[in-house]
Length: 246
Image 1 (cartoon, rainbow, N blue to C red):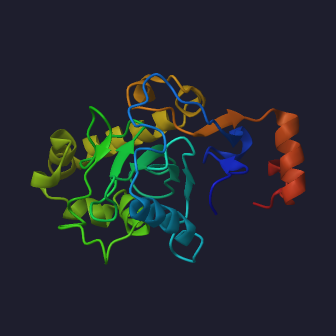
Image 2: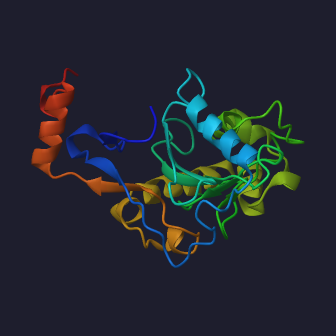
């Protein structure tokens, strides 16, 4: 459920589908804006973040289709990827990051999407995701990191989009199109999804959408060669596409 990802389904048509796997990069970059480990010096806060991650193993805490790993070089950060399976953003592969404040859990973590996505609650400038609509205010004894993760996943569903208020939007144009020209919004959401699946977005650490957003994302994808894919499918007991019943 957590940390390491095996084979990842990119949601492309079966006969054309590519298989990828992830490896974890532990490198710091020159763009690193958070001091490793020292970002959270308060032992209470560090313990709270560690317990939050440990709690993700419980049923229902980590949303389906989401994978998360803590950054060893910065105890205050988790890197994650979300696979969206339905709705306007179907088949999107979205990398994002949670950064915990030094006084966590007194304040909510900051959520930043590394993958570019056209969404009312996500800034097109730096990928910041607005948690305020769900957590007004943030209550440290009631709200947890897994609540934030479920909020992020839900934000890509129609019922959540219907409830977004203009005052909470970091992308006003996305809000306007959603209400005034749903077909245009749907087209741009689909475009976001298609771009998130491209080889450059998945495999390039210096992709323009990520280059200016701080430390490199630690969930790194790599494309499998056909023989690697076949061996992995065999190990997992999966049929080849041509052998699967219609």
